[in-house]
Length: 100
Image 1 (cartoon, one colour):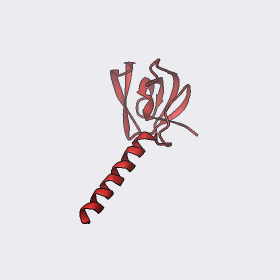
Image 2 (cartoon, helix red, strand yellow):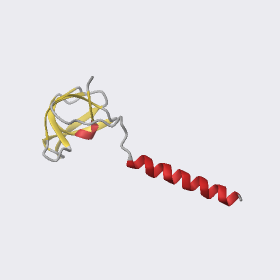
Image 3 (cartoon, rainbow, N blue to C red):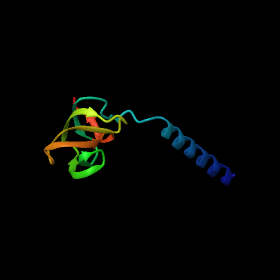
Image 4 (cartoon, rainbow, N blue to C red):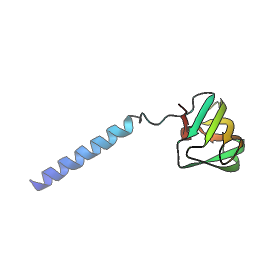
């Protein structure tokens, strides 16, 4: 009987874990177009020569990026970074959150 309870608990835990992975978190906002965004991650690399090319610095949570355009793939944003870097950079859109 103890084994049955453990297997049931394990199955329930696995089902909850799989269900959570299938539904995206509502708090995970990312850049979708031009505008002002803040860095939502602890830190993210900034690139000067293109998406993931020519590392130029690190942006930290709370820094602002004024996005001018999004890459064709939709994974990178180009714009002016304010805070720690203070120059035009490419940054991963998943690290950006729309400013209110």
